[in-house]
Length: 176
Image (cartoon, rainbow, N blue to C red; front, side, top):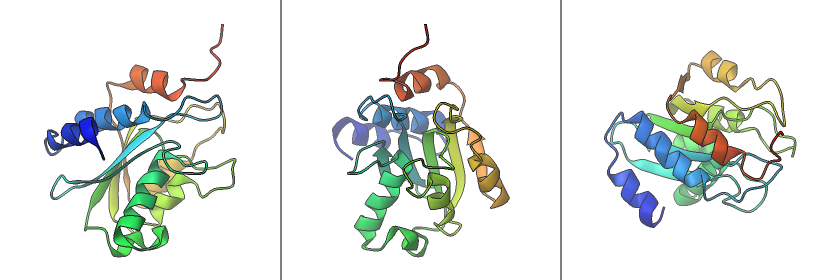
C-alpha cells in the first residue's frame, strides 16, 4: 500500500465500515477501465486491531485478477504460503470489504472469489459489500447465499452505490 492509500487507512476508526468502503473504492479507481470487467477494490482488515492486512484492485496483479484475489495473493506472498493455506497464518478474525459482491463464477476459468473466501478456513467472519454484482457478465451470483450458508455475514454498506457503479463500469458501453 503506498502513499495516499496508506494515509487513508491510518485514519480509519474501528468499525467505520463506510470509510473502509471508501478506501476500497479509491483502490478500484486504480484499475484500468475495460469493457470486459468491473473495476473493483478490496480491503482485508484484522478486526481485533483494525490493521489493514491487504488491499487489492481488479487487474492489479498479472493475469485476469479480481480485487479479492489480489488481496489473497499478496497475503500469501507476505506469509510465504500458498493462497489455499492462508487460514493457517491469518489472525483469528478478519473482515473483507469489497466494492462489488464477490463473484461466484469466473468466465476465465479462474477460482471464483467466493471460493477463495471460503478457503480461508473461517478466518473471514464478515464480508462488507458496496453493491451486488450487476448481471452484465454472469447472472445469478450465489455468493451471498454461499457465504451465509458457511456462517459468514454478508453486510451491505450503504451510501456509495452510485459512485461504486460509476467506477465499476468505466470503460463499458453506456446504454443510450
